[in-house]
Length: 412
Image 1: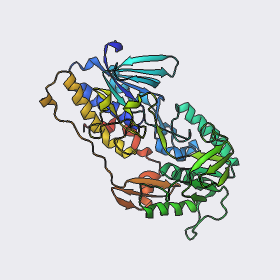
Image 2: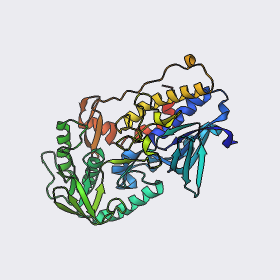
Image 3: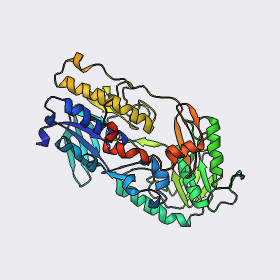
């Protein structure tokens, strides 16, 4: 029976959660004594995994991506593991780390509690705008896109808040879609059909990248009808829930400079909020993320065999490439802990694997369908390379093997 098994619960169905679940099922469970007595239980608010970086383009139209590749069924990707895997569509509401029990609300209704042998917190972070990621489940995201798309043809002005990649990419995609792109010899697009304003609190866009690349991005944005306002923070919007509760409201945006902007559409593309509402405050760092051992990815304060990975954890800055680098490290450490608990000798299971964050300048930011700025490993990349690697389809070409688990066929 499922309830007699030792449950290794993974909370979260995006890059971190799906990847660590595959890794455990491929490399940890098969090497445990009595492997049939263990199960990996993945609990996710959504039954679909999605290439979230694609949202700035995907929100415009379903025609811009193959939907069968943009969204994939999580349960379908794990059928290969049989009785060692269980999927639950639900949302964690409370972690009792002392009693080692997780409480969650089921999508189908009702609340359940599940004891765990090991727990991986991979719940990610929520975007302010429901256009830019799962703030609920896949149905909510699609409904937000439908509402926005219905309003888009009549929009005469758009404001996007946020000078990071999401804000820049969203403004760039909308700018090119609505306004086209200025000619090669033009420094800016004159008289755009739909003026777009991108507001950033920073002195430059894209703070991860060097100033020269940030300014190159700004130049590219002006060519698709985007005006950048720097050193200004959005302090209020009216109506109050514009951009968050409803994505298609005419909005008055008030800036910290005292200036107000009128927008037919407003998109808050700045920052994310870690999905940690179900956790005790004593497990959180000052920034609201899970206080995680930066070397081992264990949550030391929570007790044995509790871990965190991805945007919800504070061991590294939020970035997909850093998540994927952390997955093998965490998987090896979980496997080691499970083997020790099962009675294996410490000398036989080896030492902890240690994670070290790659802090070199690495970020790619498409601006429209054919341009972009970025760096990889500390080296600036030409616009063509940003398009080739990311801008063509916002990483969609990379996720098939990740969702299916093929990317994790080799351990470590």
